[in-house]
Image (cartoon, rainbow, N blue to C red; front, side, top):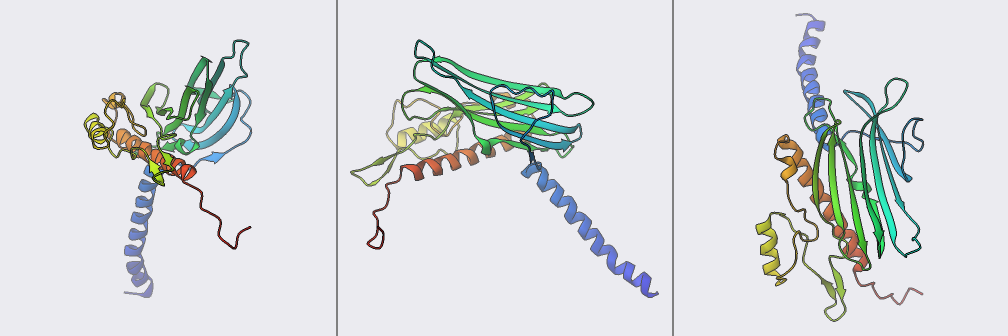
Length: 267
């Protein structure tokens, strides 16, 4: 055996290991999310309703895709009411003119209090859960018409192509806890770890909050949209929902925590 043959014999297992490692990374990346490129200006032919708050592009089996997100809160009408909406759309950027794949529009009309619809940017994610080059685009937003600080309606929506849509609808964690001056601690039920009705009712009983409506803050109401969906879709959406609620819960709790007294060294 000459030196070249020996070198090839030594490299072959190493190359095989490297190829397997690359394949594993690709699979994990599909689950972790497709890389998105943020852009400021959308191409001509892409409709934007309201004020653009984000736009992203990515490539998949269909070609180059664009996702645009927009929001708008109106001035109060003469009767004192207020309206607001969110808008999202995915476009396929192929040929001479962008082709819209799907559009999302939701609103609050003639709210007598404060109207608000806002995207949770952390919810925006594009995935290839099946690893076949066909991507899923997921967005999430809060929706409310209220005069106080209380949990908002929250929707997490996944679109796959033109016609497939899967939703989790529930309540976010804004206003779910508050600072108790006498106790010197935050009060309120913790973020549920399980959104089944039985688990939520058990939490209500544990904290003696009988009469509390379900879903609890941080939970969604049902999973019926996923009855015929690929199994991986519901698994991803559950994990994504709870990750978002954990972040919201941490951010809200931090904003409500009692500020520390300044030290002697501080002015």
